[in-house]
Amino acid sequence: MCDGPVDGGRRVRKVGVAAVDSDDTGARADRDRDESGHARNERPRDRLGRPLPRGVPGVPRLVEGVTRTPEETLLEAQRLLDSGMPFHAHEVLEDAWKTAPEASRALWKGLAQLAVGVTHAARGNASGAGALLARGAGTIEPYEGGPAHGVDVTALLRWARDHAAALAGGSTEVPVLRLRDRPSTC
Image (cartoon, rainbow, N blue to C red; front, side, top):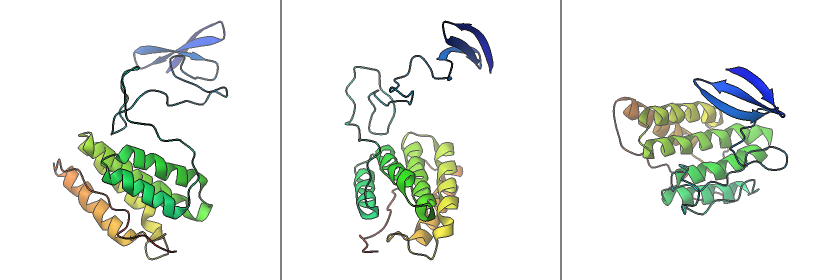
């Protein structure tokens, strides 16, 4: 990547062979941004989180940054998984990851990675799916055997590793992710 000439506070960065117009912070000019420069996700998306052309109706967007209890997070994420919306379940789990206490942050991150793995499998990207399932398993592994909000980490590790191996072996099956079998009181 190399920077081109600055023009009125904007510069052109060459990314690969394409040029991308950006401002002094590196933010792309063609992306929706809030007042502080953070990306907004205004573009409509399909059930698997793929961007749709502007003006095309997509599935309703989830409000980002919602603080939920662990129980509410797991119930909402599972509802979305059961509805065939793993990308949206990932967003719910990501909210928990970003707001969780340090001791449980990696659990939520790993669960979000598992949901993204299912998203990639549903989109037909077996390689990406296997990589994310393996990464998610590695992220949640330290929680095996401990209290994890009713999540059976041992079962999820086995599930993730089995599906990652199957996808690497050419499977096109979309894994069904169950975060836990029943609600927990812990």
